Length: 322
Image (cartoon, rainbow, N blue to C red; front, side, top):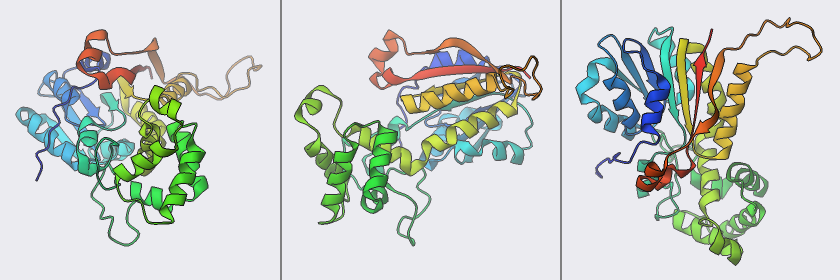
């Protein structure tokens, strides 16, 4: 069995720890534990009365996190779940209020760099892309995988996914090529899909732009894991669980994620639904948070040099006020 290696650099690490404004005897939630880089720095700052809840939908991540946090297991709880379930997790643990919540959205470096997971166009592997591999894809129709998206979605479904989640201007060309090719035989590997995508992208875009398959792979991964659907509800549930003065810190890696974070923060900052011409508010909805900083925090020059994968990261912070 391949050794689990989560040794990648945690993105915006010091900025996240500062953003959470950690109070040592409170409870914090790392919604996307990954290799526990952020979790380790959080738990180091907790007193014996503090607690850290580590969530992840990838059991490999939780296994690596448990090993990395072995000196602090008396104050850490690991939960195998999607961060969208944060409300139910806190209920089950009888936790009413937490001091802070961290979300590091998207895939981990481990998932990208482990070929058999099928996330990357840089490795040849079966078309999978599931963050949670507990379900057996061979049983019945099985869970949604990249293989099923590529080989079972209609042209219009494929075009919509690639266009919406990948923001790919050649979505129609790519969807057409996939449908045409799979009529001959199913597409089964990342290499086959990557080569097919590259074959229909115009030469100029292949030379000047990012890897031809980058946006399509992102789109399929988001579809398989329902990544965007979970963000707004999870933010609202997290804010509801925060104690006054508690912080939520969210790292996003592409415009679709960041847009949802920013919009949801704005909704919680200005929740009033009264018509603008009303002299006073009658809906009774009060702001729940204040946003910290007008603009997102970006990686500095030194971090970009050490970890090029951090280049698209944006950190947005908010504080509970009621």
